[in-house]
Length: 150
Image 1 (cartoon, rainbow, N blue to C red):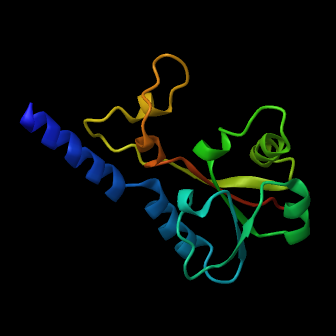
Image 2 (image 1 turned 120 degrees about the vertical axis):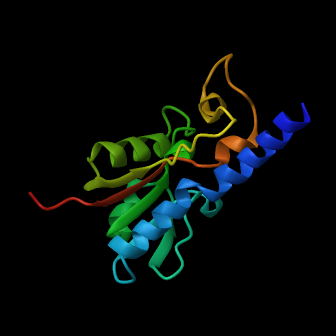
Image 3 (image 1 turned 180 degrees about the horizontal axis):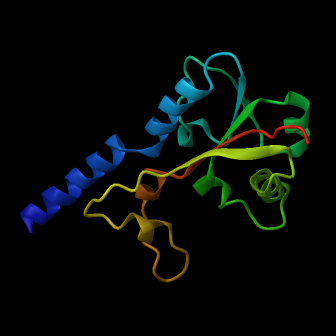
């Protein structure tokens, strides 16, 4: 029991060390760089750090996106999926994802390291869901870029 407990505790450290946000931070620095404007949509604590990039926080609204016109938009897809059906917030995330706001997916990342914790069970809906704050670790991060003009 002690060994299993220690292994599960170590799994949390492994999850944190391999969190998708770190990979996306590296990708943004390498592929986007300091010039283009990056919009961070959603709570900053759920997104990759944007140090060294030209960025601003943006609320989940199509009107604000059209006003600011960022080159890149970064979203925590797990957080976005929690938006209530029928709201403007849910409509924004859906329109961003389907390309109707003029952006396309440039990167979609979740690390999914093999650990002793069933991270998929943390994100399930319904009776099989395990309620824990560990579902905030290793979220799916999506980066959108402006679509090429047609």
